[in-house]
Length: 292
Image: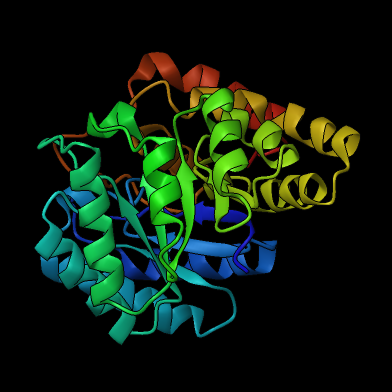
């Protein structure tokens, strides 16, 4: 079972936008030594929208090779094109990924039956564990609990990343599906409450900068230690919020640069963090014990 603190890892880049694989390798080693329970590569936080097909595939392959079986690697393989999602998912399987994360199709806004058929075909075509990903604020498309419940009957659909930030929605998915698939939070600010309600972990942005703390918070939540987990989460709460003052991954890449872990590289149309947000982010980092 994949559970705990799963980092939605950034893709480090040089100032010219080229992928910085040396920095990527250092981040992977830092996460493994810090207790991160799994790595999600080539997802939203990894700037998948602006990776070329070749870059996307090579990044997944490189991550799997670098991790070398020490923790699970979950490859982001979703697309608004079913054919493209199958291609990326098949590539991830052939190159050793442990599971795939498939975001709902964005922009073309399919209905619930279209969503069901999309995910069903990918699962039936590629024999690898698959995690659905619902983030309607980004995609304009909402995978409803009733559709998740239908998909939960497909053997290799093993989980869903529920990133609405709506605890009532999360609890509804848990009630309908938790006996068949794992539910993961995709929203750092509400992850603790969802785990205490029965979710199996958190696919996290905050874990990029506070991997040890996020691992421990998730561990405590999963064993039901509400008091200790809440104390740990209170130190991270500021980060959960300020890391979304601008579109992810703008703030988290700037925070990692501040920590000396990556260069200032990000691809258009995203830009480095607005100066107005740097002081509150530094303060949240300090409160979480992340001073350089």
